[in-house]
Amino acid sequence: MTSRQLRTSLGCLALSAVLLALMLAYDGKRFFQVLVLALPAGLCLCWPSRNARLRALQALFAGTMGLVFITDGVIRAFLLQVYGASPASALVITSLANTTLQEVSEFMAMYGANVWLSVFFVVISQSVLMASLFWWWRTPWPTLKIAGWRLVALLLLLALVLLSIAIKPWRQHHPMVFWPYWMAEVSSLREQWTDLGEQRSRLLANAKTQNPILTSEGPDTVVLLISESINRAHLSLYGYPRDTTPQLTQLQQTEAGRLGVFRHAWSVDASTIAALRNFFYLGQPESSQQHLLALASAAGYQTWWISNHYDLAIDQEHAQLAHSIHMLNKTPGRSGQSLDERTLPVLEAALQDKAPRKLIVLHLLGSHPHYQLRHPQDRMPFHNVKDQIYQGMKNQGRSTRVRGLRNDYDSSIHYHDTVVAATLDMTRRYAKKAAWVYFSDHGQEVGHAGEHVGHSSLTADGYRVPVLLWGDAIETLSSSTFSQPVRTDWLGYSVVRLLGIDWLGHEPQQDVLDLRYQWKPPSVGAVNDFRS
Ligand SMILES: [Zn+2]
Image (cartoon, rainbow, N blue to C red; front, side, top):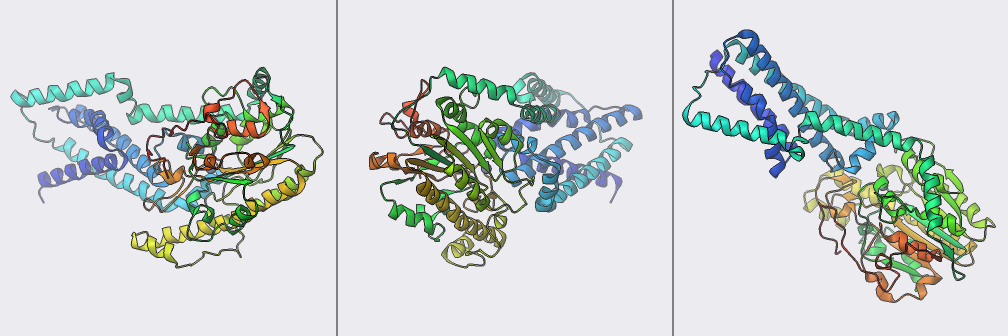
């Protein structure tokens, strides 16, 4: 191969690597926008310079830009693979701000292969790019005579580049603008969470301005069970062919008329922190003026927060508003096996407390990844099962890994069923006049739409959740109540009603238990089918 051929091949290879990295990370209009932002690196090499030093500077500029764009593309492609989300999404920003060092090592254990593959790609592409730039520096590409149509094309390209820099929403996609801003976002979120004491006092004061009054027909106890990563499509209670929820199905029969199952329930967030904020701030997380726990306290409820999560953000923002706080899981990260049944004795004690009005929040780990840690090791009814579901997934071309994860996930749901049913049993046993509410923060993608397994902001299963209500109040509702679609960011209004609280901020159109309820499909961008 002559040096000229070598130079051309290396140049083409480097260009392909850059394009591939960008194509993995961006599509459609965004791909075009980022390509324009990357253009100056290519254009600077067209400049016919004879000075070796100046050429070295040009090559250095192009090399640095190449590294920036390749790394950007690879990181984005990696996040898409792992989280099904872009780095700017609340899902990724909150996960990272909430991450401890321990979680980083667990993350590496789970996604190490993807990480190393990404690093390998960056190193190889960058080496090829540097080699091609070295050859360019030694023997520059033949300089094209820039005149006529070439001059026009060059001027047009330059104008496009100037435009991309001048327009702010376009410029913000430049990796050198995007990532510093992104890092500032993550660290400011972290700071916000370290002490939210002032915010809590403000929320309690705000709640008082709403004149929350207890009505005499209100219950003595409300148990609010918030689970994690439960996709209702995996509950036999909702028609899943595998018998994953025998106890809830049984309760639906024995408690007929008192246990309501919302058939079409949706979360509007695909991650825990955002979903909990949306629920507790009654669908207004941006203004965060009213908090459900603060309202209940102001109305005279004694409140409990019993959690099997280890989570700095949730502890500071929500749990600390309760009178009695039990954070049972002391292991940061999600790889510790802290089974949800450990919350049951604490719930039992709270139910026996003498306070006249009690709101008990129970925050479970549910089926959060890793699924195989969310059930006792000797209880895996779907381990290695090769039934219709398994076969169906095989026919769809799902890999063995994904099918295995589906089995693990369903086993975790089967265990979860016993915990959920136990909380309802206990509530029935101890409280005279009670209400019980159960929902999941968000759903989970387990190989429905593709090979992705985990939290998912891009598919409907990331948002598909169960919502159940139990209590005397349910008997008085019309049966059509439960065939209406519901969203968990509005559910707080119905919970305040179940608490028997009258307050100024009630929004009847968002309270599914009110006759004036009006469903509006949420706008979550990637998903637009909120019917089933
Ligand atoms: Zn979650």
